[in-house]
Amino acid sequence: VSAVAQETAADLNTAGVEQYNAKQYISAIGTFKRAYDIAPDNATVRRNLCNAYQAQANEMAKANDLDSAIEQLGFAIGVDPGNASPLVQLGLYYIRKDLVADATFRLEEAVELDSQNLDAHELLGEAYFRQNDLPSALAQWEWVLEVQPNRPGLRQKFENALRQDAVESNFGKSGSR
Image (cartoon, rainbow, N blue to C red; front, side, top):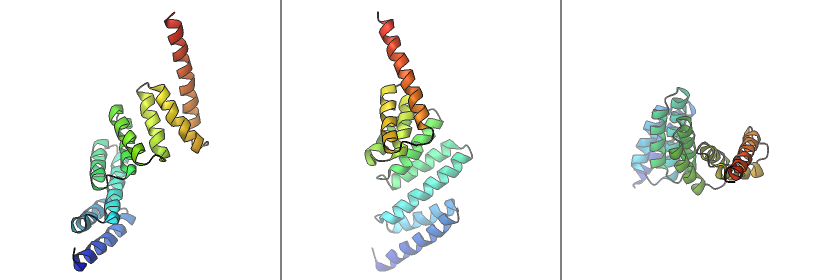
């Protein structure tokens, strides 16, 4: 890549950051895409384009347009496949749409990429819970609570799932007698 093209990609990236900071996400996406076309191997440009897609997806989700939000996240993942963040966001939207198998798949992918991501583990627990896989849900939530004991709302979910698991295992024992 020539020095002129490199400078242009840097200039476009700077302009994209300004648009992003002004919450002009559609403009930022366009500007970052132009920078990406010039310098597709530039990790900063890729991450910024990914972030802009995620921000636009968030705006769409706030407007209850989850299908468009999910589409934006597909672009985000395509441009920055090593980033767990859009996978976590996608998992959340899939849960909101009750597409639990899709959510589980994407959240397991996120946990593989970033094993320390608390949101990924908590949402994966939620997906497992909705699939009635209580042991897996409890394992995810227990790990999150060990790392962050005061995580808002999680202790209650965990304890409810624990009681439900105990009831189901007791029912299983009495049902098989």
